[in-house]
Length: 137
Picture 1 (cartoon, rainbow, N blue to C red):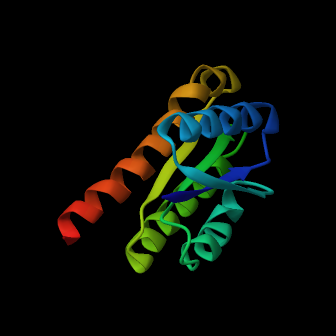
Picture 2: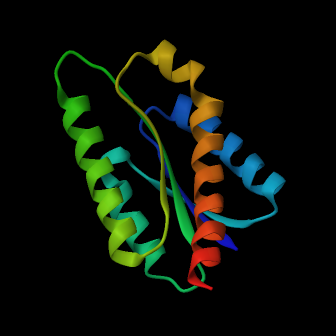
């Protein structure tokens, strides 16, 4: 099994640590992985789509942090990205796991959730591949 790990660079102080936790968990689970960086959460669907088109990628875990600012921009970014990522999962019949913290998260809240969100995204991607393989048989 091989998964893609798409990492948003925006809020990189948080997403770098998320990437480290995601990679560590993928190694723990014994799956191959490829890390792809994009500028921000809004750009994650396109990279995810390119990965899903590849025959050697079974699933994608998306890592990012959308921090609340002075406007509702975080709401727009997070909701649109999440919706498109779900659409891509259904379009390609491959799991896309959402490891995006936010919207409406403070920097402190995001920092507290680094390990949980990163680990859960990788775990969900791997579990879904295995479970889908079981029901296809």
